[in-house]
Length: 266
Image (cartoon, rainbow, N blue to C red; front, side):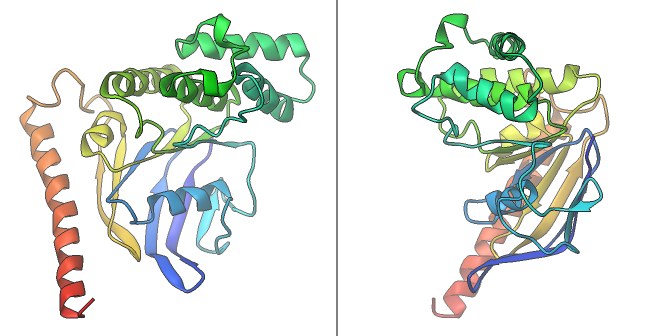
């Protein structure tokens, strides 16, 4: 199990500062939802944790060690699925398993692939389908199945359900939450979203990032057994109060930045 610590983390693309001063601590088994408007640096932070971008070793550590490169102990699910289009959907999972578990037999990899396909509600007949022959929801299920099959202690999910219809999105949200919650040792999850409702439904901890150059402007931790439930989250007064608070904080940040831009003549 892995913890993630960022202390005064900053990051720039060329000369443009994206992350200004981000500090956070995710304990093993936490489900962290990174919330904020588009362009605030949520995906950049996720890529830094994944090792896809280079961070200052003194500012970001995973499992007590600086992040130097991508690792199979960090599984990532992208919004655009991240499946190789020339390979069957099932082979995409098999390839990842072959890299993570080189000693496994072909039969064991196939068995594990089918197990996680079933866990994500995918029929066995889809194993040999090319990704382009699948619906968006099916492709995202395969990408999520691949991440869970790797059994990485840290899972990074970058707006994975953002392009899905409402029904498919709700089904996948519930599935991911159930799979994460039923594990004997929960994975640590970082989940990027700009949906307040999605964050309320999934998170143990909500971290709100301000506009770029980003910093943490608000956090909320749910005690065990007191997280919002889908069937009551719009009728529970405490949840609705928190929901309004999150919308208000994000809106205030947007208005503040807009005012500063007007005053600067931008």
